[in-house]
Length: 287
Image 1 (tube, one colour):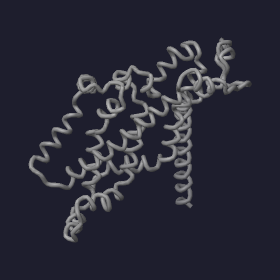
Image 2: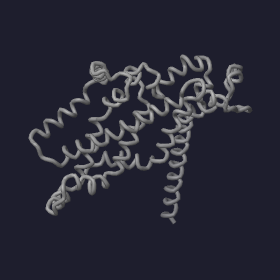
Image 3: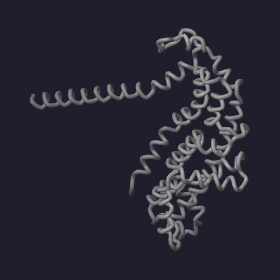
Image 4: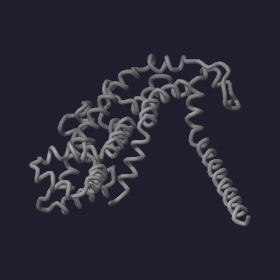
């Protein structure tokens, strides 16, 4: 009898704990998601309806898609999308090749000064991004690569952090597996692609998605290195939209453009969210 009472109290406490947890998580989710809701809602309001609201309304009875049509006609948004897609895919592909071989070299190969070189690589993370941008800008300008895809892509084809993250994952694979493969006559390249890469697939997917998001949202570097509209990306194209497209006052049209630009990243994350979580958790686990 006493055992049943204790068990009931335990269940009540657990139920209360879960209820409070889900309640506060729901409140936090509403706070986080509200800006996205407001962005979509504003994009569905007409310019006159939006400006006539002295007190903002959290709904609309007359939604319109005119703002989305204006987003593709007032400025060459399609060209911005194509430029961003080229920049994102090429940069991500080149970076994956660079960090894959670099991480494998640091994790499995033995060469003189490996630890010193890797320490110097990590030290690069201590340098402020502003200094790197200045150096890259001067270099790309001197090479005559401004307003080119090459100038946009080159400074972003490697990442010390991603090399470190992938190296940590590679080192979790037992050394005995590598030694056994070498005894069987397996080359380093074959071992990398047939054994290590499949094992670390969640981390590779995570790095790929994070890099895609980074490239898609890039603003400072594309803004510095390009002043030709033919090479604008969607991020710095927003400024062009604001200045020479809809104007600063047409908030609904601006919101429509932002929604169009944001949708690909949101869909990408929703599709691969489990892979991202698995890759991040694996990167933080040792042994």
